[in-house]
Image (cartoon, rainbow, N blue to C red; front, side, top):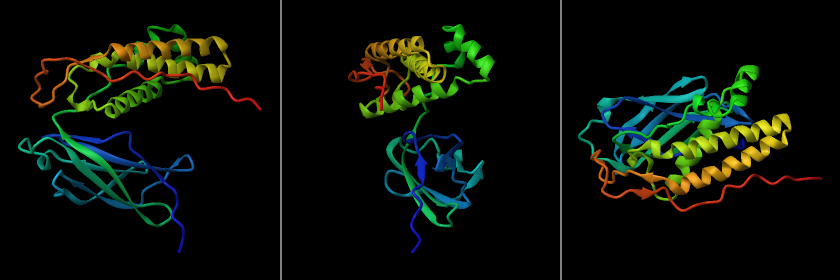
Length: 246
């Protein structure tokens, strides 16, 4: 019997499905640094009771990635909010085998979006603006990575991101971490010791910003902030990776 290929299905966190909204879900599969182009497949979305909201819907393949449009009609405003939904993918991949992938999901009022844009980074460092021009380099990957790390960190400390009403509270943390990631790459590609120092400084400032975060939370999802603000979670020291020498 042929051995399975160790594909990677990339999920950054739960899939958040907003009520009464049409939205696209996706399952990107990788192997050996490349997209493993999906040949065909289906997706099933189950609610917290295990009932099918979408039953074996046929996926659409976009640039090799399996996608599916969950329509507003199947997510009416009458449905109860829940963190217990699941999404199950069944995808035929390049080795000809069918692979099952799964991810947790939640039915929510709305998702939380990143408050930081590329211009926030370049207005603080003209060197980054020059880097963007000279190397045709986008800073968005650093922002995306910082946002992903921040939201995962919130989820790990029990802070459900879709219940946060003030995304601006995360601005400084994501900004400082984005700058740290950018200068980490800068220091590696240009072998600049000064940039490594800048990275370390921004990692420190990001952690300080994390400890100051004050969230307006909406536990009952009525879009009215709860009476008390809450912190993002316990501090975790962000360290620059060590260097290994032969």
